[in-house]
Image (tube, rainbow, N blue to C red):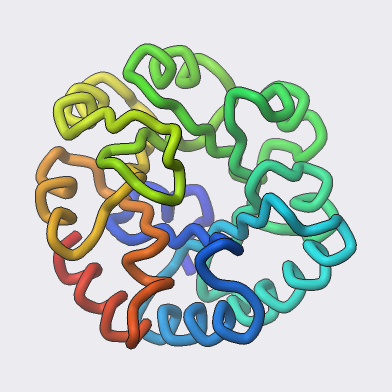
Amino acid sequence: MMLKKELLKKPGLYLVTDSGVLKGKNLFDALSGSLKAGLDMVQFRDKEASDADFFKTGLKIKGLLKNKALFIINDRVHMALALDADGVHLGPTDMPIEIARKILGKKKIIGFSSRSLKEAMEAQKQAVDYIAIGAIFKTPVKPDYKAVGLGTLKQAAKKIKIPIIAIGGINKANIKEVAATGVKRIAVVRAILKAKNHYSATRNLLERV
């Protein structure tokens, strides 16, 4: 695999797991199929799990990825450290970016969620490696998030100098529109996790990025 941070600049998908959509054996089946199809970035997200359960599942995911894909931990900086993951994804209510950077060091990836161009511009000034912008479309995964739309994404693609990841309600039907904004990496949840065939779903999405 190319240098870890360089991979963020490469067109591709970013699968975010969600325990409300899939967990247990089904999650590992989904990851396995997606990896075979060419998925190269995974964020482990589970808001409900205890640290003990999170660590146990995280170890299994890390073993499955086997350096085939970047392994990012959602929110829990201490778990990113404990699992020696490739990085962590933070939001506005999580640990401050500068503290996470001190804990994880310069080599680890730190991503940050923003809901507007203004938030993204502010985040760019900090020690982050990529900015996730969304929700691009309405999504049941984040029902309280207002859709920011493709216009915001187009503006961000022009003004943000670090890698951008589009997220929120993206699927086979609209992924080409998202890719046309100039954003190279696109995050999905249900478009892969809820698919009957995870391999085919991933291949179909990758062909449109």
